[in-house]
Image: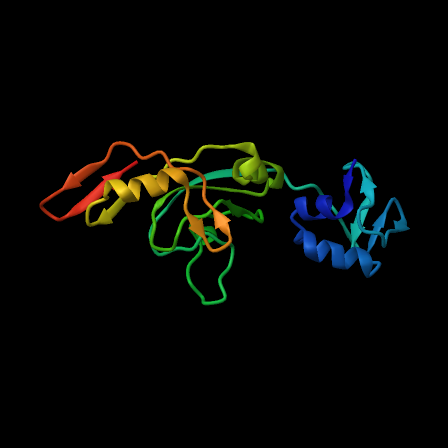
Length: 178
């Protein structure tokens, strides 16, 4: 048994928030009965109709993508920038698992599996992430110590970083580390 809005969202029909709006508006039936109460639990094999459309459960998909610089880790952008979803061809409604900055490149996962995405990104699951960082200038010991304790960014404290494989390039005055 799962919450109705979660099953609707997992089907790819719409987002969970929009599914909640449709339920409250009386546009969803389960086994022929209109459901207006959020949190109603249903089975995946129940007959679910949303706005007159029979709901079919979407197959879960997983993509490993190398995100180049110049793309945002989102499904759409109000500023019109290119998104990571623009880099794949799929008829499924997928979204990125985690984030990489616009001017950063690296491996990123995309999926339509919300449980998997939560498992990978929620701090409570302690999934370790590894980054290779290249920076102008030299990483000083004091800066390394600060990173190893965690950094306060607005109202959020980052996890403690483990910095290793530090390589200094004196020729172009840069640092590379993992």
